[in-house]
Length: 118
Image (cartoon, rainbow, N blue to C red):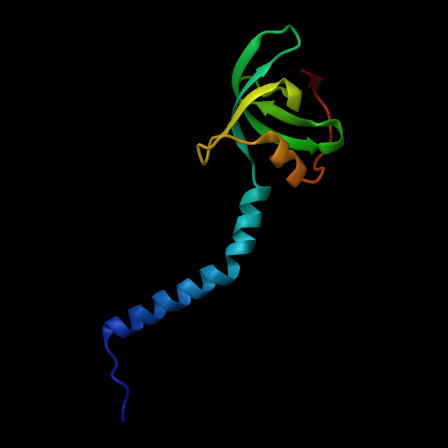
C-alpha cells in the first residue's frame, strides 16, 4: 500500500519535528537566556539613606559578599548593591518579583567587581 501524501501531512511532520527540537534544545535555550542580560526595576536605599527607584542591568554576582554589581540605565554607572539595601527587584522581562535570597544562592559568582558601594 502506498502512503497517502497530502499537504497537511508534511505540515504535520514539520510541526512534529519542530516540537521535538524544542523539547530537546529547550534546556540550552533556557541557559542562554539566563546568561543573557537581566534587567530589573529596583527600589533600593542609597548611601545617603534615600529610597531610589531605577532600572538596572545585572553585571556580576557576588554571593560571598551578598551583593550584585549592576549598571543603571539612566547614567550607565556601575554600582554595587548589597542585597540588604534592595527593597524590591522586579524582573522586567517576566514582570515577576525577584526573590533575591533564592536568586543569589542559585547563581555562582560571575563577572568582575567594580563600581561604587551603595
